[in-house]
Length: 336
Ligand SMILES: Nc1ncnc2c1ncn2[C@@H]1O[C@H](COP(=O)(O)OP(=O)(O)OP(=O)(O)O)[C@@H](O)[C@H]1O
Ligand code: SF4
Ligand SMILES: [Mg+2]
Image (cartoon, rainbow, N blue to C red):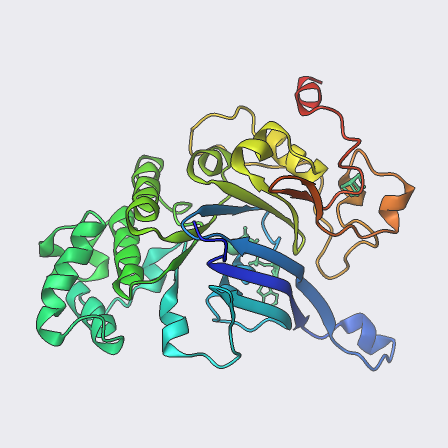
């Protein structure tokens, strides 16, 4: 793997002005909007040819980051680099092609009025991937690559099962020969029996095409099995990032520990998802200091005033916890 990451984001912030705050109006304040902080300064690298998993509770900002990466929304501030190059604000066809996304619900992302043949041809021609006379052969090659038959060419998305539709969505993403694939909960909407086959497909794409994949997921057993590294997100920040093995053996952030402990048993059952105690604070009103302190069993006074950045723990392992060196050994925590 080259040292230059496939994708890098630096200090990405995304805020939304939401609604009209009634209380502000009644109090006669000038600022009638409330600011929701979806991303509060995200730094992250996706290395070439790796599967990096991004995990965190609902509302932590995972999909917002994914949309910024594929540039379907703009960050409020921060920078984005593809292959070491700063991405200009203006979208170019080549930059759009190089990074593709697959969503949780393949049906809503496929045009129901287009046959598979028309859907693939449109992309292959628009991006000049192959000469026109080779479009059909290339479409068949793409379908075969994702485990579908040539006969799928004349069908409409509604004629496929959920798993097959996700395969189609992946074929469509691959059509433009991207370097990077963002998979935003690609198996969450599928039957358990089908999930493993889609995960196998993603692994084979990484291995055989050298794709760099950002896999957003809720299921830690899947993440442990699938990814080489894991980034943990909490309320719009990455709070820990490490090689998968290190992260599960010795998590160095209390939030990561809580996530891992919340899964009853780390099995490969794809239906096990984490649920941790206590509601996360509202992104409309982030806590001062460490954003995890209201739920953290290790919080001390300093945690209420200092907002910790990601800090170097050891090789390839970073944590945004002031007390990462003092946390008890993880096995003893789990045994409690
Ligand atoms: N267009 C929008 N306008 C206002 N708030 C938004 C918008 N999009 C997202 N948010 C808010 O930003 C925060 C992050 O949302 P996001 O969808 O990125 O979370 P997520 O981690 O993907 O959650 P999930 O696991 O449920 O998919 C949430 O509080 C969400 O309500
Ligand atoms: S900085 Fe303090 S509150 Fe935050 S995770 Fe570490 S111990 Fe907990
Ligand atoms: Mg999401």
